[in-house]
Image (cartoon, rainbow, N blue to C red):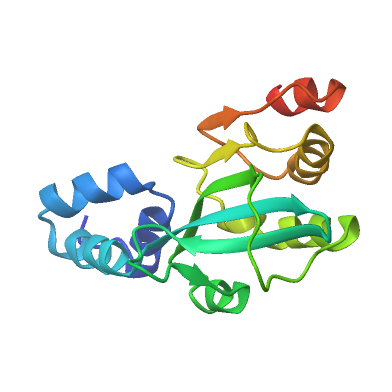
Length: 166
């Protein structure tokens, strides 16, 4: 166990979800694993990526979960913390926020492709329960073969919903 390289241990711990990492942080005792688990536990940040459709077009907002009063962050901030960043929730909401620039379908699809690697495969969830069926189709099409999720809540929006759930 002592002969295992630090880089290997780090890459294994990087795959753990939030719940596993929390439990390991409390229980692991081996010095090599303890240091790596503590590093990830301290630095891991969880986010929600929220899309919403307005009269001006599709908009998005990235929220740091449990991040205090001002939870809004930029995509550039997410990219800077790439190693420790995880998106736990992707949602489509019927909310409006002032000051956010609208997105078109092509930029939205490109944006989803860029955030797909950050989606936590163990504890990630997708919620379009309050969104529109047209926008849900766009989200599902963009994420179809790129993510694994724990929870999915969506309205039926045609064949793409079945394909996504398979």
